[in-house]
Length: 188
Image 1 (cartoon, one colour):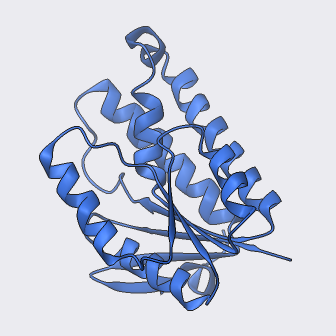
Image 2 (spheres, one colour):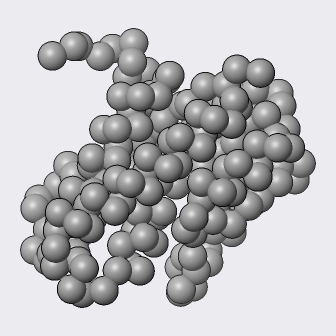
């Protein structure tokens, strides 16, 4: 079976997860939902609950705050479609495992997130399944004041570029509307 990689990005509350969920549902196949969120407070528990309430009960959920390439491989054994939500929290989870000294080496920290992204993408390609990656656009605001936020913005921006460029399809959601980036792309 030949699969494809789909990349969905957008700002906070832009509709990216809803679009990705609808895309996964339209495949008409067994869906695995890979969740990367970790609940450290009530607000995050509420957000997770909202996501869970939208998903069909027939979908299988896998928790993967880290080492998600292994979870993609496991999910692909039983599912034809995999929805990974989201790369942004995944990168954040990885950065939070680093020490302050490691984060001080900005190049090293960004490289570690990129390497994790490469492992994810390779696992998705090797799966032969349709894998939908959701991510946030995090770099469209001002330059953050603290180092961790700048490392995060840089690492996530590069991760998004990599996934969008290599994906078979890429979409940007704005105000609940999905835009086909590959179709509208201008080469440079």
